[in-house]
Length: 194
Image (cartoon, rainbow, N blue to C red; front, side):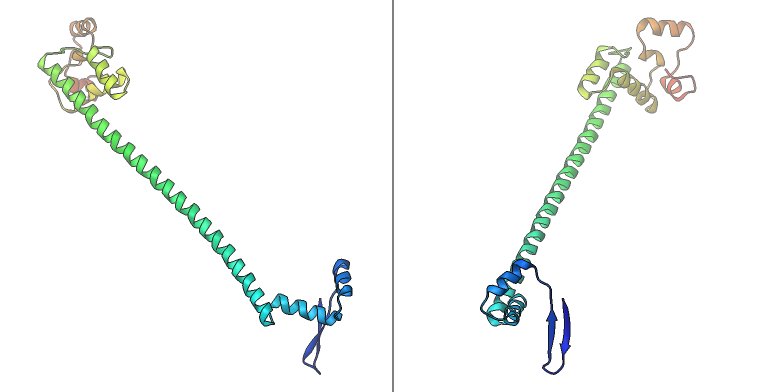
């Protein structure tokens, strides 16, 4: 499309190439080519009042479409935020459960250590029924329970020996060999791990 100014009339001459299908429609119209082009431009650009409404209607449709897109994006964003909040709440709840579980696990270890000091269970080992009870209640392995039990006894400087955490036969062998020592020394490395 090329426009050439025509200063005499304050207009511009427009040269365009149009596809054959449009040329056919223009030729069939009763108006002149100039009238058809001016009318089409006025309608497209909204120069006439009736055409201005059409232009405004197109603007309204575009704005409505844009608004709908923005609203959809906002809904998707809200959904993502809600999912993220739910995930965060779930993770926080899991953390609280773990903290509660850890507290009750430590309480269970302390109870067993109290029982050992009282002489109710002078000796426990990985497969001992009381260790197995703690394992079942807290979802830990027997070896982990025994390991934690020894270290908790050492940290609290309980009045227990390394042989209190062995089966009777093994404990007797350690006593005869002179390897019996307070659990705190055995665990901290002063006398080797119990």
